Length: 118
Image (tube, rainbow, N blue to C red; front, side, top):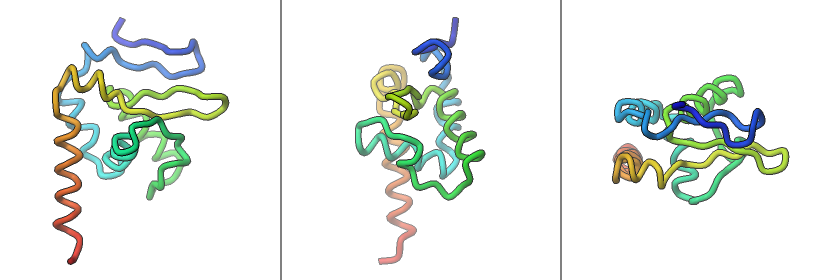
C-alpha cells in the first residue's frame, strides 16, 4: 500500500516515500506559500502547528497548501493533544533525494536576498 496512516483515523494518510517522484518533490514547493511552509520547520528542526505559520492566504487555501505538501511526501502531519503538527520528513527525503530539500530552500533564500534592496 503506497499510503500509511499514523494514528488510525485521527492523523492523515502519508505517502510511502518509495512512491514519491522527483517531480512531485520539486513541484510541491514551487509555490511561494508552500516554500514558506516548508522553510519554517526546516529552519527550526521541529514540528509546528498551523497557527505558527504567518500565511498570506485564508484558511481553506492554507489547508490546500498543507495537503499538497503532505501528498508530495514533504511533510508529515500528526497530533499532539488537540494540536495538529506539521513536520518535514527530512530524514526520509534526505535518503530518497539527497541534498535536494536544502538546495531548494537555499536557492529561495538567495533569491530573496537578491530581491531585497540593500
